Length: 486
Ligand code: FDA
Ligand code: NAD
Image 1 (cartoon, rainbow, N blue to C red):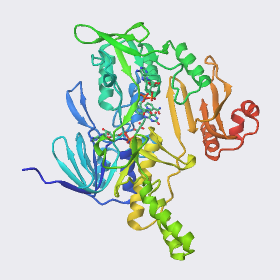
Image 2 (image 1 turned 180 degrees about the horizontal axis):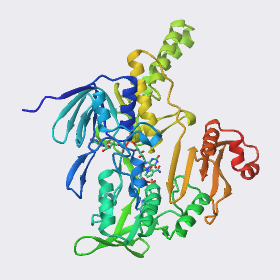
Image 3 (image 1 turned 120 degrees about the vertical axis):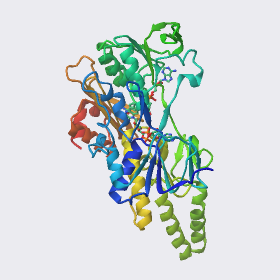
Image 4 (image 1 turned 30 degrees about the vertical axis):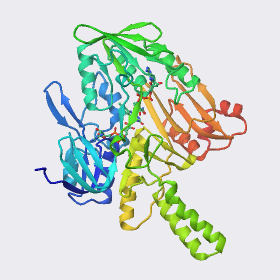
């Protein structure tokens, strides 16, 4: 006989960044013991002691940075949420003190939103009143495209701590060896640096003319490519991994490139993008731009449109009253992370949400949004329960990265014409340069390498307020001064 379902008022499905920040917000807003559970598949096999460890939510960005340091490496419990934003570290004891149940090492394989039921791989069932979907992303694998040999040993990915453990073991086994990094995005740049400081001979391969093309302009990439080359990293651009060779043990030995070149490799790290994990609710909830849409569809807007017409035609006050009532109701569902299914919320990487600043809908795969969307959703849930209102999510995109001794931040939107400022010479003793993006005569995005805390605040302010620009050449000359004077 199947065991009885475990019931919770609130369930967070997923145990990553968004889950940790949502739990903290529930703690702040008030949650009774037994009301909230986090269900997460996260666990890792410690290869030294050969034992599975369950993992409470942690700051995923640490995995491609401090976790890979050759000395004083970051290790759990040091980077549990919410230390990444300077907050309290939520150790497993914090959850038990609050009566929040951590159901870890538990993969949910079926979600029935109509029956409000989740089923795990081990056939345990969980029921809920309110569900927060926080399943994040999975990595895109080369095996997904049928790349020959992509399943060989030591061809690795990095999404969670289990992957991190495998990477550490491979780095130990292939000490001082040759590493090929496939992909020129975030993972590619951060992992190449990490492998280099661990004394690997590193080659990066990517198909585009320059690295990180989804954010970097040619002028920005000029700096990082030159800087990486000066650290001894080989850059192979305009081609990709078409196949692999392995030895008799199945360990990778070479990467065969599309252009015919062959690169020797003891380890291959692949970072060719992520994919939001929305499959469990496919067909049960509205989707948009590859994510779970947290905005009601046109159908819900139709009654409002109908009442507008009625009030215009009849000059009837009741029509106006209904319009106001409905538009208030609708605006409450915008930017509060509730999906098309009432009581079901989506946060972090999986949510496609209204980006108020740009009047469109976007999905963002970065940690700042994972944290803020989680907090916003919990506040919205609690406000709904108490009949209070909170303000809409008004997100300013913020991305950052660091490697070796360089670090950058970006705020806003990278659309329109880019205006490079400062000195992007990779050989500069203290690199400091950036780029503005100007659209319709306004600055809409700013990138800065090597800024101070005050300067990063200044560029964030510019991206938020979008000041007008009349003379682009003057903006280039003023450079960072333009931002710091605003
Ligand atoms: P997240 O991936 O954190 O969590 C999802 C959780 O759901 C995981 O615990 C997963 O196991 C669980 N889950 C999924 N399916 C499940 C199922 N069926 N059953 C049970 N559990 C399930 N961003 C940034 O701005 N700056 C940075 O420096 C970095 N650095 C960085 C490094 C690395 C290595 C990665 C992989 C990513 C980053 N990011 C980043 C991106 C950032 O970490 C990411 O956007 C957030 O972690 C997203 O938070 P979520 O909670 O949405 O997903
Ligand atoms: P990405 O989208 O940043 O970069 C993918 C790169 O791989 C691109 O340059 C792409 O063109 C290239 N590529 C695609 N197919 C290829 C192929 N066949 N061969 C070689 N290159 C190929 O994705 P990522 O770097 O894999 O990162 C995964 C996720 O982790 C993303 O959500 C990212 O935002 C997140 N992340 C963020 C940070 C950060 O914000 N600092 C750090 C690490 C990871």
